[in-house]
Length: 369
Image 1 (cartoon, rainbow, N blue to C red):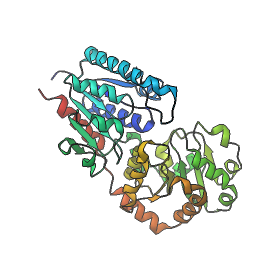
Image 2: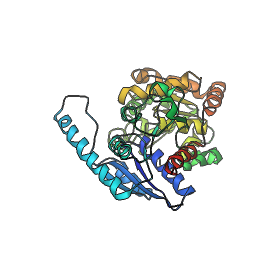
Image 3: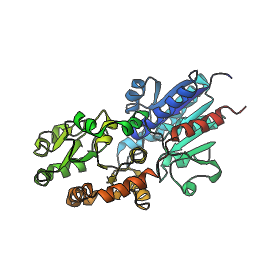
């Protein structure tokens, strides 16, 4: 069979980029001869992260509409036209056997151009509430891989395949790591209840403010310790606060060994992005989900509620975090029975073969005569 050529498009956030890289890695694992090209949005983090993972990437001049009234929105139609022209050019140059969209600005023009020119197309929807780009593309693509049940309200039923979300292979190692050693890696005590607070690679202001404001309460918890990722956006603002100096707190800017961080934790406090939830399911981690209020169509709240309905996580709205997050977390991390129930329920939702199943669907459309 002739070596297949694939274009993977999307990005903007780690929640889009890391699944895209996981898909590419699986394609390469199954078919080492395959040719892979990424297409992202100029100036976004994929333009750095994808080359670091060993793949070539091209950038489109594209961005989303800003909700507030701003002159930048006047550029949007121009950017769309320019990106479509570039997408058609990339298709002519690379002649892909399939184009895969993982969500984000760049996937719209790229997948649309591919579908219009007869190239087989697949999109992957990570959230329980479909994004605008994927809803717009749904009637044009050949296959739609989803992570949640009941996505028929967004997409044509005959195109939907329930696969789950791709998860980075390195996180699978967390199941086999020794918990004491994982805690020692971060300078944590091996015998204390451990809470991981992580707001994504850039951080979450709400979590940082809660921990800074709760310095006295945190310091009183002799049997509890916290691993706190502040995020690169907030290091200068929070790194010197009183909470960061406490003996039972390890404050870091960025965690590059998330496999060890998950293994060290009895309880995870985090946002409710699709990738994060997939990781929690796979690793059977008890969690308090505090959805970000700054995402399109509040899809993180939908993700969180899909777990709460199955008794698989605790949901706390962002506006209540300052008043309730720490007290709820300290109570929960000491409740061994409830932790076990949350682990069992969330683990039952895991789809460990998601990446392989998505790639199999990609091969199905790419290999058709």
